[in-house]
Image (cartoon, rainbow, N blue to C red; front, side, top):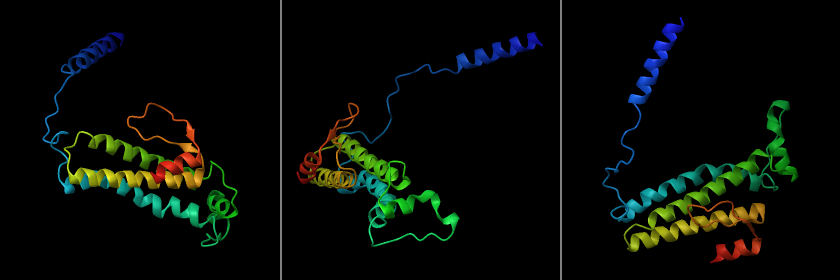
Length: 185
C-alpha cells in the first residue's frame, strides 16, 4: 500500500510541477487601453454605469429604511413574533439602533463602497484622452461622490474623508464641518 501511495504522490508532484506557470509576464492583448478608451460620451457612460447600479439597491433599500422608519413617515408593523426580524425595524423607529443593526451596517457599507467605486473610476479616467466627454463624466462622478459623503456625514457624523485611489490605508475621521466643506466644494 505504501508503494502505491509513493507512486501516486510522485505522479501528483510531477503533474503539479509540469502545469505550473512558466510565462509570468503576459502583455494584455486588448484594444481597450487607457489612451484610446474611453473617448466618447457613450464610452464614459458605460464605465460610470456600475456606479449607478450600486445606487439602485441602496437608495430604495437601506437608505429608505434608515431615513423613513426612523421618522413618522413610515412604519413597519409587526404581526406576531415571526415578523419581528431581529428587531431591526423597531430599533429604527424607536431611535435606539446600534452598529449591529442590519440597516445601519448596510448603509455604511453601501456608501463606503460607492465612494470607493467613484475614487477608482476617477483614477481610471486619469489616463483617458482629454475632451468634453471626460470633463462631463468627471463632474458627474465627483457629484455622486459628494452626495455619498453628504449621506455618510448626515447619518454618521465624523467620517473618514478618503478621496484618492489606491487608498494609502485607513484615513483619520474628518469632522462634520470638514466633510461639509468638501461636499460644498
